[in-house]
Image 1 (cartoon, rainbow, N blue to C red):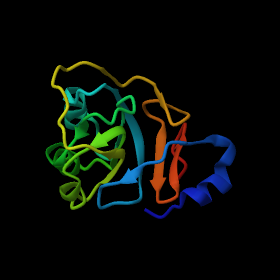
Image 2 (cartoon, helix red, strand yellow):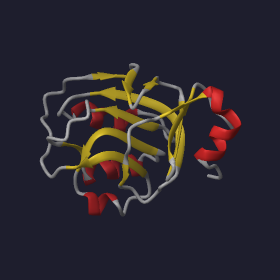
Image 3 (cartoon, rainbow, N blue to C red):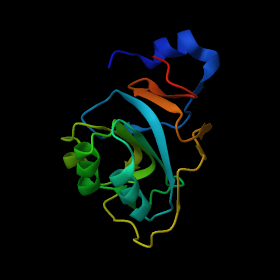
Length: 159
């Protein structure tokens, strides 16, 4: 994976959206990219699990958790599923837990923070819909590129 988000912004700036939300990296991969799959939930991770089990290999699951810091939407078990299914990464507008274990997984994981409390299991939310956070309209099938400098979104694959 040979890209830098700064270079992509220089070359394709007019075609990109730059995420204004600051994430922390929890997976072993600090750089990842792929087609976007989305899920919107609030303090409930049932649809996150279902998405991780069904989105295509190489995808980046974008989880709009409403920015809640009151519980985690993903921990080591879901992270392992994502790694085993060969997802490129996960971006969570919410929290994770089991952060030390997530750090051992060969996958990109970005979230706004950690919380040891697990989420509810009601199965409420929506999948594969446009979501909005970080001043970006995340749409399924757009492409995301993430590294240590930030997260950018393109309507199509850049390279």
